Length: 212
Image (cartoon, rainbow, N blue to C red):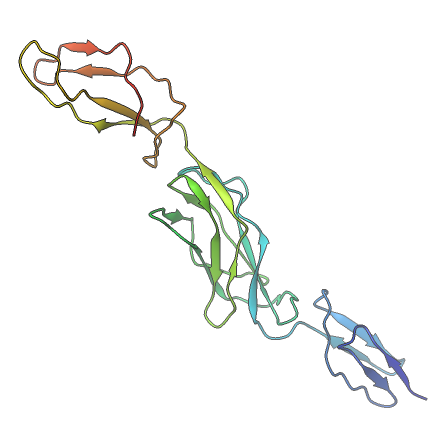
């Protein structure tokens, strides 16, 4: 007697004394069929593409994100290839002057998944990451935001212009409060003091406007 079993439209197995397997598309990388006389085990196919198992979470500039990305190696049908050890590289899809840093990049897949740690971007903005590996179809993450971090430094956005002794300068200094990545913090309210470097006598401004 013979019987035909279909797991999806890709699987047709006819059992007499032998079994014939045409193909399998199934989210489980391991699949077994029994007919009382033997067993056929279907595993994932050859590595074909990448997929984000965990999306990058974003966060403050120059700080490691709470949600770090992980990338899985898959076969043509989206099944994870559990024995894949491919090296996966992350990059900002459109950097626009920003830099991505991770503890290790590229990262080798273990058990079919490349996990990343310590990933951060130094500039504020909205970004996506692209994961790539030689010979595999790359994948782009969902978009995520990078906000300014805590204040760490000051910078002159307008330099003092100088002029006549005892007279206000035509060009007055403006100082911006920045985070570790050099991003201006628009919400900062820090009091800023100007000093005459040569004499060391302090001059405190009543208010220094934060402008670009």
